[in-house]
Image (cartoon, rainbow, N blue to C red; front, side):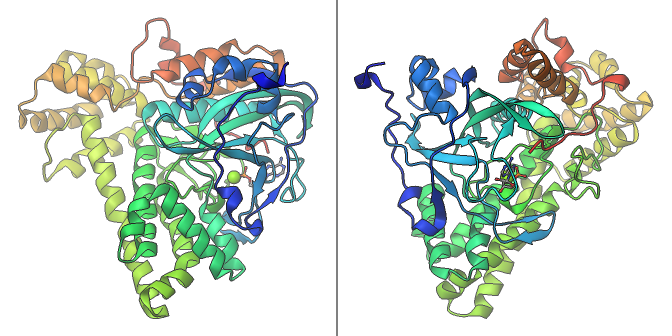
Length: 499
Ligand code: AMP
Ligand code: MG
């Protein structure tokens, strides 16, 4: 390959300009035999990267970490975090490598990161690698989230490493190429707070403000404004998770991005039957990160962020006492913002264009009936889109309830509420389809796709689920199987981090 044809990523790095104590500089460790499994063509183009170049031999060498591209300044980021409530002062990228930053077609700066790129000074006892299954899971679920319009890191590519990784057994290894608005976590702030490195907290906050919340920099109290923005971002994000039945599974503070994107897909999964106590992660025995706990945990994590920011809030407000009051006031705004975002989203799901006093009670009534009757969350709302167009389609929704009469009682109430508005049934039904996906990454189908890839090198089911989930709001003839809940014998109730 002639050198004058090497790929131009157009790296424009800023994190690498921060002081050395923010990261460890090192190259990714090469893998034995890199082979491209999947390249996200559309995402590549949106980053002004040529998919043909990325897919050629040199491109795959770069995406696997075997070659360092021109302009790349590879590094592993330092961070701390509360894991299941316990503070760990040093975590950091133990198996990830930030290659650099690129500016997308949208003018936004994105991190380009490899996950599974080999050991780093932050690896502790880990091998620095990723297994194929979890890499494909993150690919599938993060792309589904993006297709719903939910802020998320994205998958640019998955590359097989040609090497085994050793977990409970030997598994094929892989590298995920990930794009993010940034990889700054609540835990990144905690890292410096734990070291009482106030200068670094300030530099990190200034960096995050410039990158994610430039308007906060214009505010009277930029750090207070930054905390407010981060809280708003999380309140909106978690509401969006709840509206599609997403369970993150490991909402540790090191897995909460300051940009308001969903990050670090581990044992995540989507709820089928509506039940707020739904937990999938095999390591979450207490249900700390259960579906219904996610808003509470987000606030808990944001409280850790506020604590980490206290030293700079103190400098900004003049005293420790006012800094504390400022942080407390900011945190008190989480619940109302979350509840407003959730209710607004639920109104869209139910086809309510106007706002009425009893709407929250109407939503709660439906959810209670769904829980008591094991109704599939996604299908109930999806079929309500049809029921909104005509009462004769009620039968399809009723059939999802163990006791169909439980639906009837609620439906009568819903129709009275709809009569209060002038929207035409077809118009309402169409609008509802934009909020009620036909397809979610159903756990048994995700597992089947991973299993085919891992055990048989058959990537066809993976390709197909990616394709279905790329247009998740459209009914697609021939793909009905992807819309159906798992049968009892197909249910996958536990997911694993696979780290
Ligand atoms: P996670 O639970 O994936 O968010 O990871 C928590 C921490 O463990 C992070 O610091 C990771 O970098 C680190 N980690 C996870 N898996 C590995 C691995 N295989 N090798 C080294 N570090 C890892
Ligand atoms: Mg993590």
